[in-house]
Image (cartoon, rainbow, N blue to C red; front, top):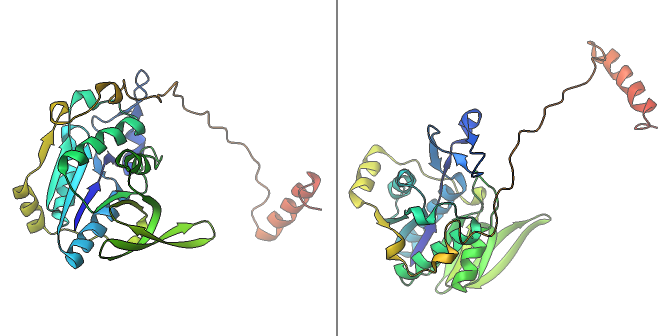
Length: 264
Protein backbone atom coordinates (compact mmCIF):
# COMPACT_ATOMS: atom_id res chain seq x y z
CA UNK A 1 0.00 0.00 0.00
CA UNK A 2 1.58 3.27 -1.16
CA UNK A 3 0.00 6.32 0.47
CA UNK A 4 0.97 9.83 -0.62
CA UNK A 5 0.19 12.65 1.78
CA UNK A 6 0.11 16.23 0.50
CA UNK A 7 1.03 18.64 3.28
CA UNK A 8 1.57 22.37 3.65
CA UNK A 9 3.57 24.58 5.98
CA UNK A 10 1.44 27.47 7.29
CA UNK A 11 1.97 30.46 9.59
CA UNK A 12 1.35 29.70 13.25
CA UNK A 13 -2.05 31.28 14.00
CA UNK A 14 -0.96 31.68 17.62
CA UNK A 15 1.18 34.53 16.25
CA UNK A 16 -1.74 36.09 14.34
CA UNK A 17 -0.97 39.58 15.68
CA UNK A 18 2.39 39.48 13.94
CA UNK A 19 1.03 38.38 10.57
CA UNK A 20 1.08 41.06 7.86
CA UNK A 21 -0.02 41.11 4.24
CA UNK A 22 2.12 42.41 1.38
CA UNK A 23 -0.15 45.06 -0.16
CA UNK A 24 1.48 44.70 -3.59
CA UNK A 25 1.31 40.92 -3.95
CA UNK A 26 -1.62 40.14 -1.63
CA UNK A 27 0.41 37.38 0.01
CA UNK A 28 1.36 36.77 3.64
CA UNK A 29 4.69 38.20 4.73
CA UNK A 30 6.26 35.06 6.18
CA UNK A 31 9.56 36.54 7.34
CA UNK A 32 9.76 36.50 11.11
CA UNK A 33 6.54 34.49 11.51
CA UNK A 34 6.84 31.00 13.06
CA UNK A 35 5.52 28.28 10.74
CA UNK A 36 3.98 24.90 11.54
CA UNK A 37 2.68 21.81 9.78
CA UNK A 38 -0.91 22.58 8.82
CA UNK A 39 -2.98 20.98 11.62
CA UNK A 40 -5.41 19.29 9.22
CA UNK A 41 -2.46 17.76 7.37
CA UNK A 42 -1.09 16.38 10.64
CA UNK A 43 -4.21 14.22 10.91
CA UNK A 44 -3.69 13.09 7.31
CA UNK A 45 -0.09 12.04 8.08
CA UNK A 46 -1.20 10.15 11.19
CA UNK A 47 -3.90 8.31 9.25
CA UNK A 48 -1.45 7.38 6.51
CA UNK A 49 1.02 5.97 9.03
CA UNK A 50 -1.76 3.96 10.70
CA UNK A 51 -2.76 2.53 7.32
CA UNK A 52 0.87 1.56 6.67
CA UNK A 53 1.15 -0.08 10.09
CA UNK A 54 -1.97 -2.12 9.37
CA UNK A 55 -1.65 -2.80 5.64
CA UNK A 56 2.10 -2.59 5.10
CA UNK A 57 3.72 -0.48 2.37
CA UNK A 58 5.09 3.05 2.59
CA UNK A 59 4.09 6.68 3.10
CA UNK A 60 5.43 9.47 0.89
CA UNK A 61 5.07 13.11 1.89
CA UNK A 62 4.75 15.82 -0.76
CA UNK A 63 4.78 19.57 -0.26
CA UNK A 64 5.27 22.71 -2.33
CA UNK A 65 6.80 25.81 -0.84
CA UNK A 66 10.00 27.63 0.13
CA UNK A 67 13.02 25.86 1.57
CA UNK A 68 11.77 26.38 5.13
CA UNK A 69 8.88 24.00 4.36
CA UNK A 70 11.40 21.22 5.04
CA UNK A 71 10.53 21.68 8.72
CA UNK A 72 6.96 20.52 8.07
CA UNK A 73 8.22 17.53 6.10
CA UNK A 74 10.61 16.62 8.92
CA UNK A 75 7.65 16.67 11.32
CA UNK A 76 5.80 14.23 9.06
CA UNK A 77 8.85 11.99 8.73
CA UNK A 78 9.25 11.92 12.50
CA UNK A 79 5.63 10.72 12.77
CA UNK A 80 6.47 7.64 10.71
CA UNK A 81 6.41 8.61 7.02
CA UNK A 82 9.09 6.93 4.91
CA UNK A 83 10.14 9.58 2.41
CA UNK A 84 9.53 13.25 1.65
CA UNK A 85 9.66 15.45 -1.46
CA UNK A 86 9.66 19.25 -1.53
CA UNK A 87 8.70 21.15 -4.68
CA UNK A 88 10.77 24.30 -4.38
CA UNK A 89 11.38 26.72 -7.24
CA UNK A 90 10.80 30.42 -7.84
CA UNK A 91 8.69 29.38 -10.83
CA UNK A 92 6.11 27.90 -8.42
CA UNK A 93 5.78 31.10 -6.35
CA UNK A 94 2.43 32.86 -6.33
CA UNK A 95 0.45 29.74 -7.27
CA UNK A 96 -3.25 29.81 -6.44
CA UNK A 97 -5.14 26.60 -5.67
CA UNK A 98 -5.53 25.67 -9.34
CA UNK A 99 -1.84 26.07 -10.15
CA UNK A 100 -0.88 24.32 -6.92
CA UNK A 101 -3.07 21.30 -7.69
CA UNK A 102 -1.65 21.11 -11.21
CA UNK A 103 1.96 21.23 -9.99
CA UNK A 104 1.34 18.62 -7.29
CA UNK A 105 -0.30 16.33 -9.84
CA UNK A 106 2.80 16.54 -12.05
CA UNK A 107 4.96 15.57 -9.08
CA UNK A 108 2.72 12.61 -8.21
CA UNK A 109 2.92 11.37 -11.79
CA UNK A 110 6.71 11.47 -11.45
CA UNK A 111 6.59 9.64 -8.10
CA UNK A 112 4.86 6.73 -9.78
CA UNK A 113 2.14 4.23 -8.81
CA UNK A 114 0.16 4.91 -5.65
CA UNK A 115 -2.91 3.50 -3.95
CA UNK A 116 -4.19 6.43 -1.93
CA UNK A 117 -3.66 10.18 -1.59
CA UNK A 118 -4.52 11.86 1.70
CA UNK A 119 -4.87 15.59 2.28
CA UNK A 120 -6.02 17.69 5.19
CA UNK A 121 -9.52 19.04 4.62
CA UNK A 122 -8.14 22.58 4.29
CA UNK A 123 -5.19 24.79 5.18
CA UNK A 124 -5.66 27.17 8.09
CA UNK A 125 -4.05 30.09 6.23
CA UNK A 126 -6.53 30.32 3.32
CA UNK A 127 -9.27 27.80 4.25
CA UNK A 128 -10.38 27.04 0.68
CA UNK A 129 -10.33 23.23 0.73
CA UNK A 130 -9.82 23.32 -3.06
CA UNK A 131 -6.41 21.76 -3.63
CA UNK A 132 -7.43 18.18 -2.76
CA UNK A 133 -10.42 17.99 -5.13
CA UNK A 134 -8.44 19.87 -7.80
CA UNK A 135 -5.59 17.39 -7.51
CA UNK A 136 -7.99 14.45 -7.87
CA UNK A 137 -9.41 16.03 -11.02
CA UNK A 138 -5.96 16.41 -12.58
CA UNK A 139 -5.17 12.78 -11.78
CA UNK A 140 -8.63 11.58 -12.89
CA UNK A 141 -9.29 9.61 -9.69
CA UNK A 142 -12.33 9.61 -7.36
CA UNK A 143 -12.23 11.87 -4.30
CA UNK A 144 -14.15 12.16 -1.04
CA UNK A 145 -14.00 15.15 1.31
CA UNK A 146 -14.73 15.62 5.03
CA UNK A 147 -13.64 12.05 5.76
CA UNK A 148 -13.50 10.98 9.42
CA UNK A 149 -13.24 7.19 9.06
CA UNK A 150 -11.48 4.89 6.59
CA UNK A 151 -11.70 1.11 6.23
CA UNK A 152 -9.62 -0.51 3.47
CA UNK A 153 -10.05 -4.04 2.17
CA UNK A 154 -7.93 -4.91 -0.82
CA UNK A 155 -8.55 -2.38 -3.57
CA UNK A 156 -11.84 -1.22 -2.08
CA UNK A 157 -12.55 1.03 0.86
CA UNK A 158 -15.47 2.25 2.89
CA UNK A 159 -15.31 5.81 4.17
CA UNK A 160 -17.50 7.89 6.43
CA UNK A 161 -17.74 11.62 5.77
CA UNK A 162 -19.25 14.39 7.80
CA UNK A 163 -22.31 16.17 6.40
CA UNK A 164 -24.57 18.81 7.90
CA UNK A 165 -27.20 16.27 8.91
CA UNK A 166 -24.76 13.74 10.40
CA UNK A 167 -22.68 11.19 8.49
CA UNK A 168 -22.59 9.67 5.03
CA UNK A 169 -21.09 6.23 4.30
CA UNK A 170 -19.56 5.70 0.88
CA UNK A 171 -17.76 2.89 -0.93
CA UNK A 172 -14.89 3.78 -3.21
CA UNK A 173 -12.27 1.93 -5.20
CA UNK A 174 -8.55 2.60 -5.21
CA UNK A 175 -6.65 4.63 -6.21
CA UNK A 176 -8.48 7.62 -4.78
CA UNK A 177 -7.99 10.87 -2.89
CA UNK A 178 -9.44 11.55 0.55
CA UNK A 179 -9.51 14.88 2.39
CA UNK A 180 -9.69 14.17 6.11
CA UNK A 181 -11.02 16.15 9.06
CA UNK A 182 -9.53 16.57 12.52
CA UNK A 183 -11.76 14.03 14.23
CA UNK A 184 -10.40 11.09 12.25
CA UNK A 185 -7.66 10.28 14.80
CA UNK A 186 -5.34 11.63 17.46
CA UNK A 187 -1.90 12.42 15.97
CA UNK A 188 1.08 10.95 17.79
CA UNK A 189 3.76 13.11 19.41
CA UNK A 190 7.17 12.16 18.00
CA UNK A 191 10.03 11.53 20.41
CA UNK A 192 13.45 13.16 20.01
CA UNK A 193 14.77 9.88 18.61
CA UNK A 194 12.04 9.99 15.95
CA UNK A 195 13.21 13.44 14.85
CA UNK A 196 16.80 12.23 14.66
CA UNK A 197 15.69 9.31 12.50
CA UNK A 198 13.66 11.66 10.30
CA UNK A 199 16.73 13.78 9.61
CA UNK A 200 18.58 10.68 8.48
CA UNK A 201 15.83 9.85 5.97
CA UNK A 202 16.45 13.13 4.19
CA UNK A 203 14.24 15.20 1.89
CA UNK A 204 14.40 15.27 -1.90
CA UNK A 205 13.92 18.66 -3.57
CA UNK A 206 12.43 18.95 -7.04
CA UNK A 207 12.36 22.12 -9.11
CA UNK A 208 10.82 23.13 -12.41
CA UNK A 209 13.35 21.13 -14.43
CA UNK A 210 12.39 17.94 -12.57
CA UNK A 211 8.72 18.04 -13.62
CA UNK A 212 6.91 17.72 -16.92
CA UNK A 213 4.66 20.78 -16.73
CA UNK A 214 3.23 23.47 -18.95
CA UNK A 215 4.93 26.60 -17.59
CA UNK A 216 1.87 28.69 -18.46
CA UNK A 217 -0.09 26.71 -15.83
CA UNK A 218 2.20 27.17 -12.84
CA UNK A 219 3.05 30.04 -10.52
CA UNK A 220 1.50 33.45 -11.07
CA UNK A 221 1.09 32.85 -14.81
CA UNK A 222 -1.00 29.77 -14.16
CA UNK A 223 -3.16 31.35 -11.46
CA UNK A 224 -6.50 32.74 -12.70
CA UNK A 225 -7.36 34.10 -9.24
CA UNK A 226 -5.56 36.91 -7.46
CA UNK A 227 -6.05 39.37 -4.61
CA UNK A 228 -7.55 42.64 -5.86
CA UNK A 229 -7.11 44.54 -2.62
CA UNK A 230 -6.52 44.20 1.10
CA UNK A 231 -7.74 46.35 3.95
CA UNK A 232 -8.40 46.10 7.64
CA UNK A 233 -12.10 46.52 8.53
CA UNK A 234 -12.83 49.40 10.85
CA UNK A 235 -13.68 48.14 14.30
CA UNK A 236 -16.82 49.80 15.62
CA UNK A 237 -17.69 49.20 19.22
CA UNK A 238 -20.88 50.67 20.63
CA UNK A 239 -23.37 49.73 23.28
CA UNK A 240 -24.65 50.64 26.69
CA UNK A 241 -24.43 49.24 30.17
CA UNK A 242 -27.88 48.17 31.29
CA UNK A 243 -27.20 47.31 34.88
CA UNK A 244 -24.86 45.48 37.20
CA UNK A 245 -27.22 43.27 39.18
CA UNK A 246 -28.57 40.29 37.15
CA UNK A 247 -32.24 41.08 37.97
CA UNK A 248 -31.90 44.74 37.00
CA UNK A 249 -29.98 43.89 33.84
CA UNK A 250 -32.58 41.32 32.77
CA UNK A 251 -35.46 43.79 33.22
CA UNK A 252 -33.72 46.58 31.32
CA UNK A 253 -32.72 44.18 28.53
CA UNK A 254 -36.32 42.98 28.16
CA UNK A 255 -37.56 46.59 27.86
CA UNK A 256 -34.78 47.43 25.42
CA UNK A 257 -35.61 44.50 23.14
CA UNK A 258 -39.38 45.07 23.36
CA UNK A 259 -39.03 48.70 22.32
CA UNK A 260 -37.27 47.58 19.18
CA UNK A 261 -39.84 44.93 18.31
CA UNK A 262 -37.46 42.05 18.96
CA UNK A 263 -39.57 40.76 21.83
CA UNK A 264 -43.35 40.79 21.68
